[in-house]
Image (cartoon, one colour):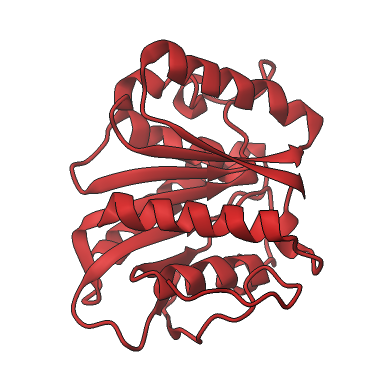
Length: 240
């Protein structure tokens, strides 16, 4: 893995990755890599405005570039989670993006991981309940893990806590920030507790001093850089 320099930014010091953009996704790979490689699909949060361009967010580009430096194909997608009503639409967008990812020549179709951020967290549940053999790991960063009780959508479909038993042995990682948005903390705590009670595979990476969306800040700390390196390294090993 390329080492990030101590230049005050979270993803500073990385070698540029080779980028290819399609209608549905951006593909980041190392120019030095040969042949098909494992991939990590980065699933942004939301809701986002219809004119938002998450594929251009510095954090998404940074994670994908770091993934490429770690020997993976970093895949950045966009989905239409424009409101709480759009989770089913966003889930369909994700499924289509994963299908396209697995068809790429630079990607090993049998080694794919999914990484969910913030409000995108519930989009993991379809994959938890029906886990294909090529899905090697799931990662969440400061996630929403269950809809609120008064949500008028399909709560069981998007409840990651309730789906843990269906993918107990699948490698999973949760990144938590110290200064989280308060309503998200109880479900994150419940998720960790349920994993422990069920003996489910779950690694937890705590990011001290960090806030929700810390990748968008210019004053990255060494603990936040170390946490991101640890999480990407974990994904590379799970996919390797």
